[in-house]
Amino acid sequence: MKALVTGGAGFIGAHVTKHVLALGMDAVVLDDLSGGFEDNVDPRAVFVKGSVEDNVLIDRLFEEHKFDYVYHLAAYAAEGLSHFIRRFNYNNNLIGSINLINASVVHKVKCFVFTSSIAVYGEQDPPMREDMTPKPEDPYGVAKYAVEMDLKCAHEMFGLNSIVFRPHNVYGEYQNIGDRYRNVVGIFMNQLMQGKDLTVFGDGEQTRAFSYIDDVAPIIARSVHVEGAYNEVFNIGADQEYSVKELASTVVEAMQTEGKLLHLPPRNEVVHAYADHSKVRRVFGEQDYASLEEGIRKMADWAKAVGSRASSTFENIEISENLPSIWNN
Image 1: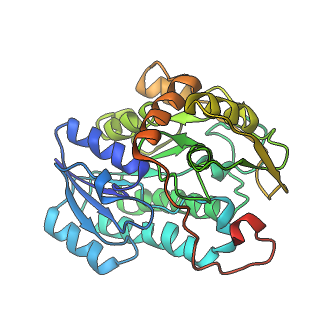
Image 2: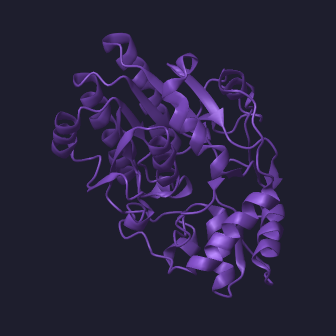
């Protein structure tokens, strides 16, 4: 069996690639390195530097490798920033996905695994359940839900099987801690290593269920071998929600340093977002999940070993109106 893993040099994709290889499959990793690092790619995989927006490259890879499975994890997952980079968001997260779906239909891929997001639910009363009607409130969530709907159309018209996962607030080793726009755990750790205050939008009472990578990636990888998962949608991640302030305290303790919060003006975001996971347990079985303290400690050990990274600025902001001031610096 041969699998394509898009975004395999990025955070979740690198972990999924390792588990795909452990299952005995050959893997080709496609990544443009805009948010990932080639060092993250398992050396047993074939690495191709390129973008999912390049449909000519996509068609060539499918023709050459005859993929059995596609794991599509390539995305720029900056929810809050997506309001200000709308064209980039839709080209990268929607059109790039359609290029892959087209090729998967043409080349008769057995199953297309797509990592969507809890962002598709928008501002609904948690816990989010798969039977809720998605109501995304930002362009990132809109793009993710559009891909979900297109996969449904592709199954009905062409018989393309797919599995959709909606992970949320995943953290762990290989995360790009230098990205100032997403992944609050990595942002906090990077700020602490640079001797900076921890920046929090609003009062810090927003709640999320922060999910350790090893509780997510193995299920995504083995899903193609679970018949009952085909053409279904699954929330995946941790059950217990925490406030951003509680997260900050846990990170400070794990990093074994001092840190204080710097409260910034609130931004437009869903205040409370966490999910129900009874469906994924029913189909994939029960498992033990890492506690927040355990997962944060593992990531902290890794972060301290690799050191802080410079926070790069997104160069192509399309709309500056209402852009948080911290993202302007």
